[in-house]
Figure (tube, rainbow, N blue to C red):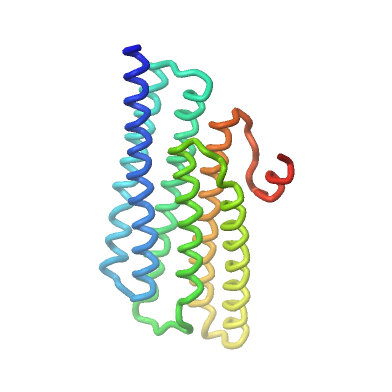
Length: 227
């Protein structure tokens, strides 16, 4: 009983720390987009500086996972929960990296007048963050009932990314002077599209925790039809 209590206590700490890390990463991504919209170099540098904090937290939580496995020897669902946390932490760290990339784009374009208002890119960032939030909530609750919501977010992300890509490509075709900015904004959109992918990866880990079955969630629609 005491051993189980210690395990539950450490697992709860892991859940809480992943939520904290998720909140930090979410804030970094929001701030990076805000810095890009407002050409806020101070905010962009703040995002870049916070990357070290995320890296340190990732290492700390991975060590906690190892300690739980070594000392508590979990089995079945408990073991899958702790082992899957490694992948979740990696995906969160990579989202932070994308936020840094966007912040660096802000610094690169600080002295330039934008070729177009940034409307769709902030929308894309919000949808991608919503996908990440669904997946993190699913992890904490060990609940995969939000598959339909994840499918909707994935479809929205893919559709909006394609629109942004087409629009920016047209800007480059119309005037070669637009190539630098349009290409950088295309990269930003691709970073956000990858954020959505990381959300899907996290949900994939949750599915494995709950069912004990590994599924490749690259095609969420396909996964749904196979159920």
